[in-house]
Length: 166
Ligand code: SME
Image (cartoon, rainbow, N blue to C red; front, side, top):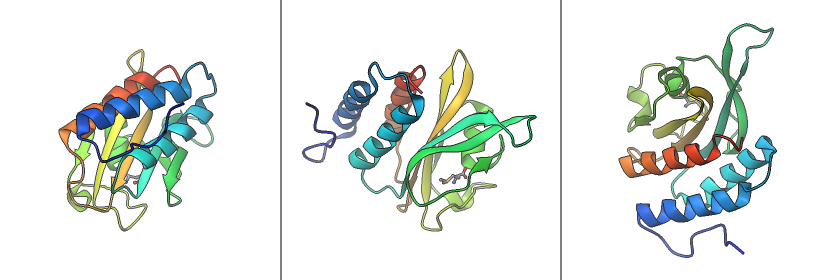
């Protein structure tokens, strides 16, 4: 069985290799997207040091119908804002641009949404299915410049794995 936590501190390539293997094993053959997002949020928390929030926002209809927006999904960390319009904050920027947002200093990011005042840096990666954004993976850290290009590449690989599992 997988131990869903690295046995020792790992360099980024090995860390993300193990994280992807664990995420693949946990979600394999399971069609329930909420269950898969919940387990992957827990896995991110176990694997990645120096986080204060790890989880998902899903693309869903706005209240009362109309435009789609991001709606809070399974996560680990403090309770967070529930709805984020496309283009708003770091998550909304990732959804609108369909591109990873690697933010070294959230206080310098125009429109950053502070769910937890402790957050200092953030990585948001869109999950694309057939070219459409269906969710974003959001990681927050209390450490400035916590996330690197290697983290972005690792989470992008995770997003690709999850595209038809959430
Ligand atoms: N900081 C995010 C909002 C989500 S929380 O960090 C969980 C943003 O600016 O989009």
